[in-house]
Image (cartoon, rainbow, N blue to C red; front, side, top):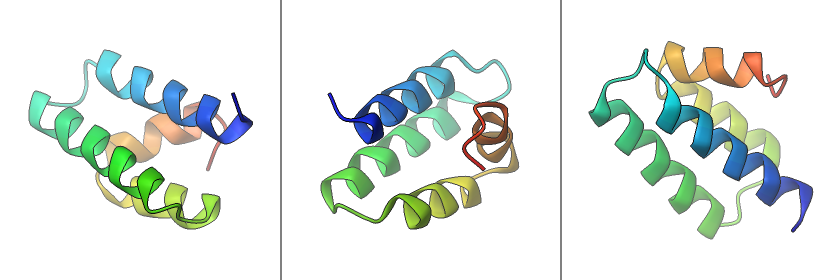
Length: 67
């Protein structure tokens, strides 16, 4: 498994486990992750766009050291 895919799976897990995000925010974030990965966006663009979904999602990325 590539490092990018490992990071994506970690992000999805953390989002799903988050107590700060609503179910709608979790679903929306995971949906976007899957779409962006399929579109093969560049990693920097991917993280930047993901962080824009919600300040709470951005906080998760910061906590993981990705932003």
